[in-house]
Picture 1: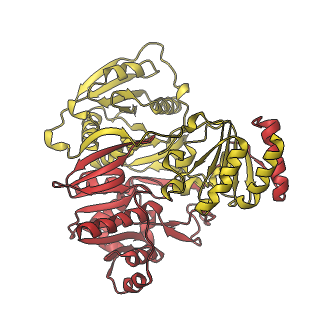
Picture 2 (picture 1 turned 90 degrees about the horizontal axis):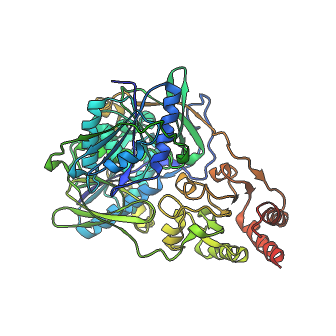
Length: 256
Length: 329
């Protein structure tokens, strides 16, 4: 099986974010990491390749710093990487991001494309499904298990409130992968070494520009949300905080 | 194109998903702000009774979009049905709840007609005749007001809990219901879904718990779960976790709170080292009181906490256990 994994670099979960001078975006001087569900998508692709042979290709879009997620993926065992490299990719909406990816892979023949179920930064939860529609492929979302069958694949979809469903589908297909589908591996030293010699194809904005159009939605402003709830901050040394919390539990919340 | 708003309610296996009332409330609020009429639609194989159920609300018209091929749910059939139907009605705005099912088909539907979805919104603003929709970004640390730059129809999905379902206004008389039959060709549906099932019976029912002590990534290591358990025991409460903890296998899946786990409303929810990702918050924001302990002062959990402790949980929890034991005598 030849599998493409779409990966995204996002600000680290506990990184404090600041708005930039324009107030339209965040300041870039934060730490980044791979979007968590994408890491599970990569792991699943590597496991499928181990079972069924084939190739795992990773793709990302973003500025030069985003190459880090591809390097890590290659170190974990991906065979090659594609980087749509330009700052402008950061400002694309989900529709155009999917179009850029579709354009960058138009000469490839994948059996499966994996994405994380959503990104931890924008949280659109759309790019994978849009990509499937652009390619004319079937898709399934929030996947917790993938088995190859005679005619295609059987996947386990997570539904809400603890429910699941198996779905049989033909290939090629796009799947959005849920965190926790597997256990993540670490890159080995030898893997990190080998990654340096693996192919990484760079795609410029110009190469895909004709495939993308104007964004269909626009962020008018970005801001720190206003608090709607009154929060009381409990401060002091730990022992004092503990006493105050117990006092709140007993006298205000009446749970003790 | 007509200036109408269309709410598409959600049904699964012939039952209305209650979150649909919230979307109707949202639609009514936008209708009040814009003056645009509000219609509602239910899509499925045999959904006239659901159409009747929602027709009691203050709506101009209700549509039942039907085809035998719409049961069981598939993204191919739902996108095809709504594409056909919306082409005939041409609403300006299409509203849906941001459920797993909607997430599965609405980006496909919008793409098929060259339009966009502003997803997972928590509100809207009508400014100088322009509609913008508010959504959380960066795990709720920031918010963005987003507008459409494309032609209509505009698709918007609303986060669970963004509007109050019980505030959906009833109509003076039932709205007229029209059944629209759509044609879905045999080859359109490529996926074959099997029966829906629940994983091995849930051993733990957290929905009845009065006190919940929940742990998140801040607990760092599996062995540290023990101090949270001791606190839960001292309080006479139950232990729960955010998704990453269960994904790591540190606690069983049936102790997970959030959109993919249980939804709880205890008297006290004590969140230890939980940052407060949206997917977690939807499962616990109904708690009567929330105490949050987190070392990151910007953690979104503090947005909804009644009492906030910015600090290291490993410093706070041990003396807290002692104080609780003392208080309980």
